[in-house]
Length: 244
Ligand SMILES: *Cc1c(COP(=O)(O)O)cnc(C)c1O
Image 1 (cartoon, rainbow, N blue to C red):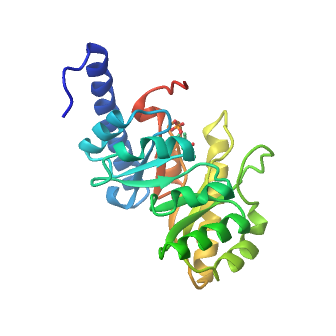
Image 2: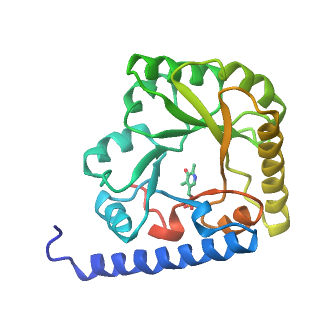
């Protein structure tokens, strides 16, 4: 139970509520426009830098999925998330030596970008008698400073990972380059969608293409129109991030 909020805090919650409703409305529109149902689209909130109280308020509004992108931050907030009503995922770059710390705490790791990382997730999951869902992160813009596998490596990497115990590939994730025009961003989203469909049609054992996770605050409608069924939205929901 929250007590006496300051005017500033009340305003913050009102903003989050208005933003939440706006995003849900936009998701609905884009879903219908792309021939799908609103409930076919998973709205995950990217919660980096956001205090658990605010995250839990968004959960009270109906938000069902949250994603953190730093292990340290996730662990420090872990006991305060309302995980009875929402599901926690990992969406950031993950170092092999930190896998152990989040296995069993997150339902999905969206950012698998190497066979070595998948191997460690497999090992730690087996040790804990768990199956961890993962997405393969694709560096669709071939950017040097970004994580993710290259498009042409996908078949080989998937074939290798498919054999790992304790891990199940559930789809693809991408963070495309920042684009000046909508036309450019559609180009990357379309490439991802094509890849998603191509891999789907190969029907590989232990690989299912259930989720195509792409689209953030500035472009989630475009992502949905291009075929995304999971979007990861941070600042459009919680406001501009303040890094401390
Ligand atoms: C922060 C983050 C997002 C959300 O970014 P916004 O532009 O604030 O919506 C999405 N995906 C990942 C991996 C992130 O780290």
